Length: 274
Image (cartoon, helix red, strand yellow):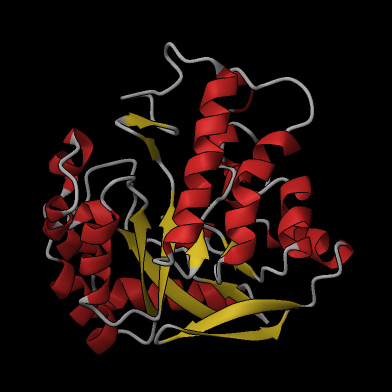
């Protein structure tokens, strides 16, 4: 069985209106492509920063620019007009945990995807507000994995998204030298003590880094800590669903993974991988 839960119904790269993409026809197109690619379990997880309610959590300029839609309209659309699982991709914002928890707990999700895109006010994966402009890569990587550990420990998330996103730029940004496991260790105690599933995402194969998230060494540590795996593509258009899943399935199989996570109304179950 294959899953894809970290899926967006509309692209980030160009202006997009919810009314153009939150439609039965678009949802059916995603379902058709998923079926063609053997993906039986499909869900959507729109970015929290797309919705006006997120401004009660944080008022970063990027969020203020993008928060134009209504979160409850999105939830109603997915529940009433589609057969997709209902999720959301919610950023971990240090110091705003209570506010984000209030936003999430007010709605009944199948799952919540947690991501770390920002370190304080700077972005890991955007040219704008770029954390790399004047920062030592050692400090950036350290802060990123410390924050990732905080996200896992918060208990707000069912899935920890693209957990080594900090590598996204590949050679376009400086990378620390030596064994990167010293950074992974900074998050590992919190991950081990959490109940979060670790996302294996093929999205990194579409990015400058050209690698699956997370790195094999990171995933090995998570598996040793007893964490389950959630398989996703972080698709923003139907054509990206299940992107290069063959590589992810091969990697997981070589590491002895035989089951992946499924979610229903906040409850996790494990299903066979294949």
